[in-house]
Every structure is written in structure tokens, then in C-alpha cells.
Image (cartoon, helix red, strand yellow):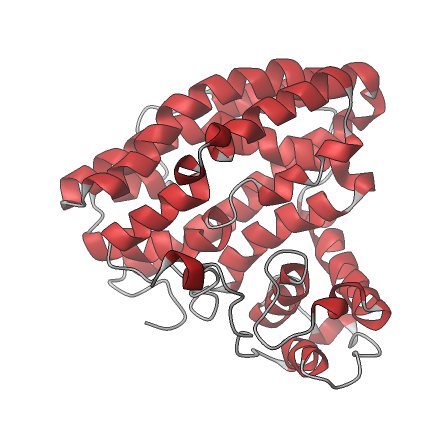
Length: 334
């Protein structure tokens, strides 16, 4: 697919239940859904709710083919999205309860790199040691839902920061967006990785193949990014990603080399090994410390962002490894 066509809005995804069907219908001209079903009929982590939420969030990114841009701020859709968000956020608060842990302690825990994978719960270790090219292609397809818009959700926090925190955040985002070179934008590097693996590079192409666990990891950063009240959680999410990225990227680069992937695929992760080792320090010392120096009451929110990120990544890892170790696909569709 050419570069221009690759950046066009994707088609609407196929619905997975009444919530996502109602959202799809509304985007095609039906009235916005009026109310949420009762809680017993609506799992906050299931395919239906996560796809409905993902679809509504995408109106703030590329939108969808044949869907008017004006629906981005449709009051009925925003009200329905708020109800979905409330269900999702409530579940996260229950599963990631508040503790006395400080943001510094939570990030220190993430920086402790384990020796090996004794619990067998790490996707990057599995891919490095056992992964096939098909496993790597599935992983890239699912991660494309984020990496083809890498850094975009985090950019929403910029107007909500100031001083040292804003300067540090902009410095890291500048690198993510290619440091002024369009061919070095990390989303473009990931598209090159996908092409190297013979995957479709069109934005949003693999949504229908993505299970709820993958959608939830993307929805989390959109949730945090779109709400000023969750700016601390967004910084925590960003810090968690940057702190864990370098060692994980090193293992994924090794996995791709072992599987015989081409240089463009390997380059995406080698780039993150180097860049994120630097970003980690900037995020901790300038973004997190700068934010908490000016707004110390956000410490618990930063911790929540860190822990919620880990919680959803663990759920996705369980989905992937559970399927792969049984010789099955982790995708909903081939």
C-alpha cells in the first residue's frame, strides 16, 4: 500500500456485541445510543465494550471512512462514551487498588530487570527464546494499533503540563516524532517493520483481529490522554512504557534476528533500545519529578497510571502466551 493510501481513515470495524453495534450504527447515521445496559450484562474488559470504546476514541485520531468528522464532538456519542469510560475506569480502580506506594517506588520496581523469565509470563522473553516468525507477525499486527500512532495519545498531556515537566515531555515526544525528520517518526519505522514482515501497513487494519486485551492497552492511553483530571495517570503510563521499553526492545530485536527478519524490522527495536534508555532518565527526572514538584497531590495518580499499565499488559501477555503455548493463534481472525 502506498504511503498516501496508508494514512487514509480505516473502515469501521465489525461489531462484537450490542454496544459496538450501537456505536457503529450511530456513526452511520442512526441516533446515538441512549443508555448503557445493566452492569451484569456488560463486562468492562470484554470485546464488545472495549471495541465500542476504541471506536469512539478513534474519532479523535484518524476517524473512519465514510464517517463525518463532525461526529467527533457529537453530544450523544460523548455521553455514551463517558458511560463506557466509567465502567472501564471503575474496573481498573477495583483491580489496581490504591496503596501507600509512591511514584518513585513504583518506577523503581519496574527498573529491576529480572534474570530470565522464571514465571513464564514475559512475551519478550518467549519471543526471544521460542518465538517463530508467525508469533512475531501476530505480535506486530496487534501492537500496530498503538505503534502506528505512537506518541499521539501522550501528546494530549502537553497543554496540561508546565515548566520542567512540559520541557521534558516535549523533548521525548520530539524524538518519538522523528526529531524533525518525517522518515524517522517512530510510527513510520513501525510501518517499515510491518512491511518487512509482510504485514498490511494501513492504519487500523488489524482491529478486527485484535482481542479485547489488545484493545484495552490502547484504550487506556486514550482514556488518560483525553481527560485533564487523569494527567497524572497519563504521566505514569508514559513513564511505565519508557522505563520498561529498552530491555524489552533488546529482546525483541534478538527475536527478530533469530527468526530471520529483515533489517527494517530489527531496526525499529534497536532504535528503541538506544532512545528509550535516554528517555527513561528524562521521564523520571524531568517529567515525573517535575510534575510532582509542582503538583505533589498527583503522586497517587502517577502510581495508578503505572499499575494500570502493568495490569493490562499482564492481561495481554496471558492472552498471547496462553494461545501460543497451545499452538494456537492469539488473533481473533487470521
